[in-house]
Amino acid sequence: MKFQLRDSGLYCYSSGEWQRVGGWIEVVARTRLSNKKHGHGALLQWKNMDNLLLREVVYARNLNGDNARQIRELLVDTGYLLEPGNISWTRLQRYLLEEMAKAPPATIVDRTGWHNTVFATSSWTAGQAGEQHHFVGQLSTSPILQEKGSLQDWQAHIGRLCVGNPLAVFSVGVALAAPMLQPADLENGVFHLAGLSGYGKATLLQVATSVCGAPTFMRSWISTSNGLTAVSAEHNDMLLALDEIGLAKPEDIDTATYYIMNSASKLRAKITGDLAPQTHCRTLALSSGEIWFSEIFQQVGKQAKAGQQNHLVEIPVFGRFGAFDDLHGLPSSQELVDILKRHTRRYYGTLFREWVEHLTDDIDELPAYIQRETRKLLDLWVTPHMAPQVIRVLKRFALVAVALCLACKNYLVPWTEASSVQAVEKVIGAWLQNRGHIFDSEEYRLLIRLRDAVVRWNHRFSKFERGDYGRMIGLRRDVDGERQWLIPKNTFLEELGLPSRYMRDIEPLFQRGFLDANEKSRGTIKIKLRDRSERFFALWPDRIKAYWESLPDGDGLSQFPTYPSIDSEVAENE
Image (cartoon, rainbow, N blue to C red):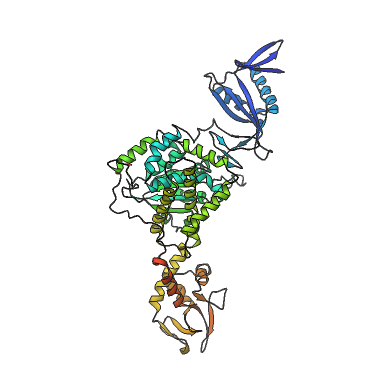
């Protein structure tokens, strides 16, 4: 059977004449998944009755199977003019299948973000590959990435007002850093901006959102856990902006943060007993609210663990005027907030597209560049006393700074590289000041209790030679000229609030040389006294005192600027 595609539509040669099948339609590409084994189909392109050009990927299993009616309904519903009668649809089916076999190959993707060297979204793709990449389902859902105005408009009306405002610059940086997680080989993370109502938190999220798309790109914590999981997957390799954490259910936030932190949903079973497919996401989230994550976890009877604190970075909102330092000549922070809100509704989305195109231009060199520039920043920021937990968070901060600096080099944002790094450093300073220390959290709590206990215990030891400590807390002796305290096991655990299974908790004390043992599996030292053998924790008190005295400024936070938040003017109406 012969077909002919004309400007006026598709025709079929039958009974000695060309008969019209329907409107203009063509097969752009023969599509399949990247593994080339599954998902075969065709990328169709057609014009509807309003002469609007539409595109959609349809699967061969539907086009050539019992579900072909779904494709017919899709075309007709979108305005494709199909001639009446079943014969017209049968001919169109045959035409599409024949053209699919002849069309050039293309890869389909069903999630946003990186697919080797290509970055795909529901609206566009960037990057070069051996063949075209197309996003599945462009008509089934409205695209989350939208554009309005030009990049120059965004720079003049939004970017310009970010200058001199560290939190605003940082918020833009989070949006730019999200697609760099994969080449940087970093884990997901959440930056949570916490502060009183009216401080400008929501405005900061709107500024970050304008980098990627329309105001609808920003989502809310007010959702079910399944809804938040679906939204996170939708924002794969992109910013996830979440507002109003205080209005969401703590249980839903707990589940959603688990998903974000672990990059995958929890394992669930189908009714049949088989495992349901997991959803995956790679994202940087920017969150805001009046309460802290630690408060939310307390409401569900949990305490934030070290792994969670590596991913959940809580930043107090700071600035002379709520979240801002420079009002750019405006009479109040409320004026600045109102203008930013108005401009983020008018200019958005163009920066992200330009940014991704720059990333894909140098995708082969990007991982090495990120690693090199991140290392430079960490060499400036990391001190000898910093715990690995803090350093992991600093790596994520460094990625934001590297993204901002790279955007500056490509003239995408209207500020300098130096001011980008300074903005991130001020945010780090606020985070560390709020955190209060540079240690792993569990370790810090133990070290603080131990430091206080050393002072409290100082005169409560009997001489070792007596062989009995009576009502005292333990024994003391000199070992190679160094003072050592022997504290009964149960007393030590009780005084420091340690669990009965304590080995994981006290490991940092051995690493720092604060404890000694001749029973490694127990962490204790077994000593024979006059009439019995007893287990003690062997503590070196002078080493503990020397350690705290060696810390710079007592906390090691002085390398970052700090911002007092008291007496700052706030924007009363967000």
